[in-house]
Image 1: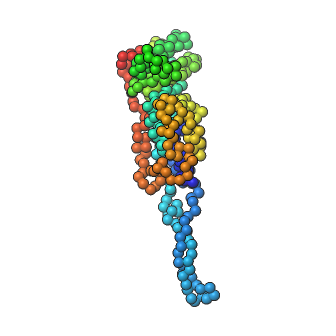
Image 2: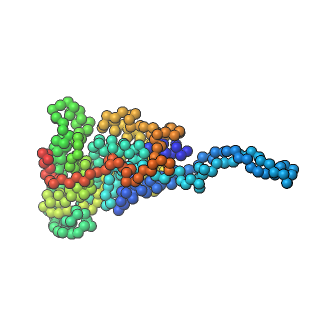
Image 3: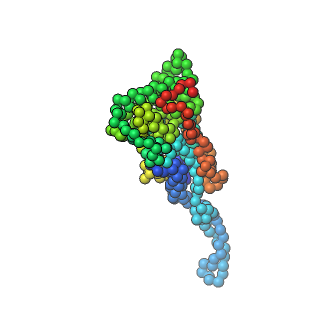
Length: 358
């Protein structure tokens, strides 16, 4: 049962990160819950071995004899060897800082390599960003140190939407530039129709779509579709929007609603960070993960579905290496292997007046 349980853990799944929780603490919590679930499974029946035990001869209390007896072997008993599983290889996708919340993708086992594929696919992510007009802080957050207060009575939804249109247009031009595509080719046309135009390498934050969901001064709510972003850059974007509106603005909340092909509907709440829920989430997401990565990277299904992907293999396989207490332990700081982890990208230019010749 231990091998089958581990085999069903290879893959990707999403959790919902609440605000105020560090991503490292979240990863450690998930690992602890998975280890508890794996070690709580009923151990297999112990192997039997033959021992010659000294005992009285039947019908006589004085004479002793050796009798062949089958007794259980206790070398693999949990009280003797300790827990069967002591560490798991868990990787983290695109990170969220402490104040942000929303969808956070994790990979277990061979899913860590899929995190790398997901990172190189340059998939877009969706955010809802809440802004507050009328003040500015040193870190662009509502609870930061106040540096300025301004009036905002002149700000209307029409003015805000005009600024958002300028932002989206300039970033779409930058997206084409960083994609290194010749727009006169058939390949570029087909990729544009399928929505597969992506930057080929690292780039500043690129916004593919932005719109106002709610406007009730001083508060406004934006929906932002972007890639290669950090949450600090999204808060800075709100600050830049406030300056363009001839006022100031701070960001009160950042929430990720989609990361690639994982949405809020796929994200497990904290009460469901247990072995069975995560196993089910991995199995449900596996076909979609394979299809989306094949579409965006051109990878074959066999490359994406390694040993133990569907959990059908009941025997020991190479996929189980590094999972038990026997062998080399995988350190927590080495589990990500740099896969899918955002680099801090600070653009020296304004997010609104994006120069495509960067």
